[in-house]
Length: 381
Ligand SMILES: *Cc1c(COP(=O)(O)O)cnc(C)c1O
Image 1 (cartoon, rainbow, N blue to C red):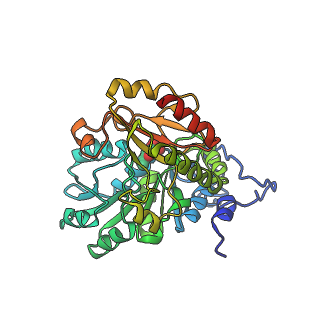
Image 2 (image 1 turned 135 degrees about the vertical axis):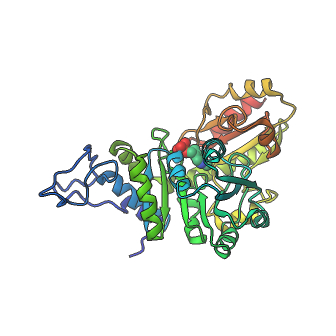
Image 3 (image 1 turned 90 degrees about the vertical axis):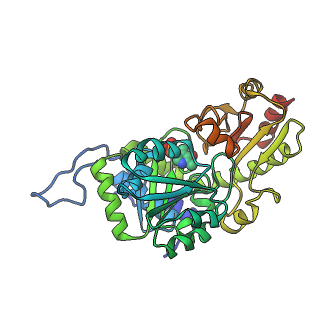
């Protein structure tokens, strides 16, 4: 039976423990599993490859993204790395020019040295993606909404281009979460998540995930997952499973608070520019309306007449927002992309896509919106 999102978030992949009846999935804190005779086991041999707590999480993640298979990793970057291992020297990748800094870093500093070429285009224009393709293109990697300027890519339109050209198509769905957007339904072959963010949602776990439908592709990815070994332990898997049980409620609160904070900031005299896809004048608003359930709690602002020093001063004065990297937790965070999350991108490349020195990114949490607005009011006054 096809259950709806909230039911899947609470139950998918999870069964009362057969040996004790424990309702919550136990933390199977074990590296290995007894075999009755060599090869005669219960589906678990060694915890780098498989662990029952992680398996419950992977099945739950797959259900949330409407996929057949889920793979959990010890970080979002380990998940990204697993996909990139499918490539061979000479292959090309078409990807966005406004990416998570760590994705840009693994592309250019790790995989370029193995002879893989990355072509960076503005993915909010699907035709630019098409123009970036050559006969060597093996992968399209899209992030939407992008980090930090919240540009939207049309997942379905790019999916058609990928299919026409027989190219593997991955969507990094970290910013939207499976609650707001399901790329597999729109033509993606693989969904990637930094589960560190909204999925776990409590800023106490670093984890990544891949979700997909094709069994042959799953087998290839599982090979690298086990062979390379960037898999999470049972404690973290348990925490992520627990976090997911409130994903739908948290996302509703993030979206509601995001809207209130964005509306407060929109006409503030200290704000030169605001990026939030819920505004009708945001260039990606129509795409967001088409493919997302709501507009999320991520907002970026450019401060008016603020140099780096003034921007630092403002970023350091909050009392409810915390100045920190990361996003998607229950608590509100503020981040200075140019020196923090996107510090690994050369100044020229980041400024071209709007990651200027006076840009701040807000991850609006689920505290009382009035307290968040008061905090912003104080700091900006
Ligand atoms: C954080 C993040 C990643 C990397 O994930 P980690 O869990 O930090 O390794 C990748 N993509 C996006 C959009 C992110 O925000």
